[in-house]
Image (cartoon, rainbow, N blue to C red):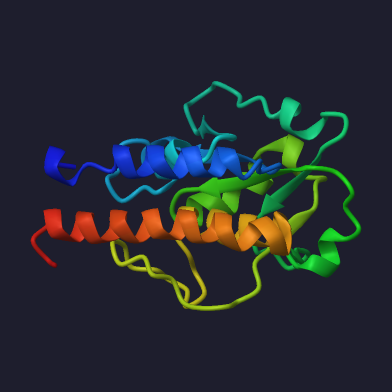
Length: 195
């Protein structure tokens, strides 16, 4: 983005506020390498805003992506955010069964690229999948979404954390994230001359 539209200050403010809320969820984005430099990618914004967020690249030729540390950490449970047929709806009722902090693993890429993550990454085959309940349409206007219920990666992360972090912290965290997201969308459209 042009310097006058930069989001660094907004992201930094969001991150500081989230740190003060003592969020317990960590986010691990498995990004297709072709997304790395796309201006429409939202996972990089998540990494800037969230205190406990990392991005790992997949699809880099013969290099195997090691995800074993995401799956086997004592005292934490890993969940893959992907709307497969066997996915549990992410809800307070489902979360009541989980008594540990959550590592949320989020595929990032086009719908086609993201759908291959669970199949191609061996470590992810046996962890629970979760999907979001449909609440409202995406506010992302930078890419065309092939599915009505489809969300940008950042939106999916914000809505997931809003549920996972519970009724006291969750809505505050989700609002902080969604506010930065709206600013990003607005400034990107402005930079394109479409706002």
